[in-house]
Length: 182
Image (cartoon, rainbow, N blue to C red; front, side, top):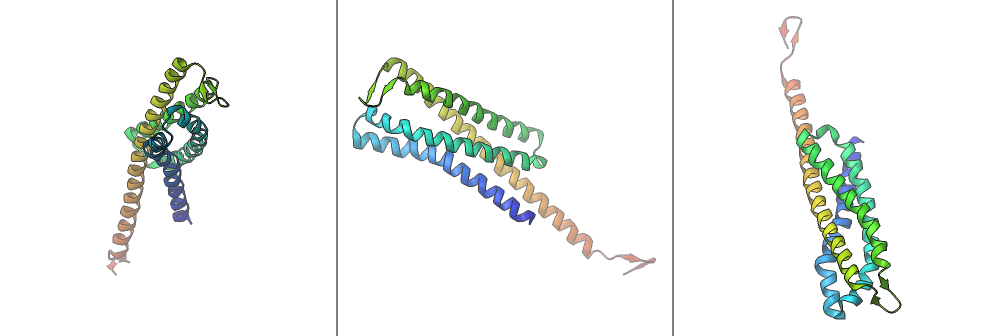
């Protein structure tokens, strides 16, 4: 039963990372440039991305909860440096997410969705740049976190192999029974 819990936990981390970080990467590298090419207007595309980022932020919260659960569940396999890297990456992702949640409504207030116009373009673009930089930093922290998670999982698997190997070798050793080797 424990093996299945580990497998399910790992699958949740992989799926959460794929949905959030993979989705964000695909969105930024494929969807937005394609939308710009088709629609021809950064402003028009912006009114679409404005709504899509809400979903990305929800996926971020779900992934952060799953990542935190994995962080706690695997804490026995963390060395001091790995613990620092995992905790720091998770904290960075969470802190940026709090900032993105705070920034999104400020950006929305600078838009007129009915007229599809930006009300204060200089202010909007400055805040939007902060949003993009934050998202990029968050993605980088996510990749660091996932690399560390894979390292932890590798350590856990190696410990299991060593324990199983040691049990096998001790079971195959001759035993001494009442002063005689059996």
